Length: 373
Image (cartoon, rainbow, N blue to C red; front, side, top):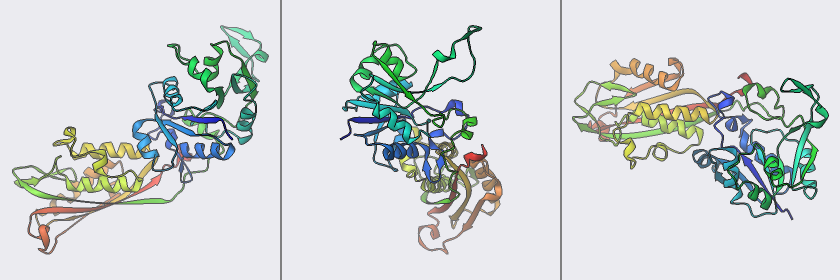
């Protein structure tokens, strides 16, 4: 029976990666990177529990993929690790970074097999280049390149982190207690993904799947006298608008739902609830901008969108080109990838009675092709 818990750290904001997509949300085939790493470790060894550490927002989405234990990270790697350790009761804990995404199974097993040889078991690489410190050469035989994952006695790691001192890794914390560190052979394949240039070194990853993901959205709003009407982000010259918590842009609302649907990220009410006073009278263009940024951050590109506006009134033909330009700009795609159709309800129903408007939207997403970064 296993006596080890796995912690995978991924609460960072990927600033050094310099890409609109967070590196933990790059896709290998149809799997986000964090899930690929978790499943690889799960296949490589038996763990009491697997804990994924990330931001609260990302955890809400991660939970749609797999039933791991999820813990909200802190402001630093050490704070994130401490949060995760609060959920660990096993004798040993193996800690790794999601960004170290190609750790060989043999390396994982070497670490676990040495668990009784030290308070912390650390994979290392030898240094092959000449090293200088303060303009003076040093003996490279006495140096090591430290990698993760690292295996620690849980109680000792918890104790070592109860300090204001910030440690760069678990072994440094354990060593500060005067405890023994045992080194095992690491692997050059276990390269950490830090910058975009590192993408050339993570050879275990497959390209992102070319499949297209399609989402559908629909929204309906009744008219309200004395309010500015806005559709697709464009003001419409009539003396009535939409009854809504926000500005009531029914077209953008349907489009947001279509985008979120394609990404598997819920609906507009989950992200911008009408019970939240922050969104009272909100500009829907701002909501769409936030949604697009989130779509990009989670590893997707926007392909094309298609909207059908059902309205007996007002007449929308004079506004269609302005609508296309506005949406294309907000979505970051060319205008030819935005299609807007306007139709009537043949005087049937509430639309036909000129009481409101309904909009249907379709959006297509593809996974970011990180091979081209």
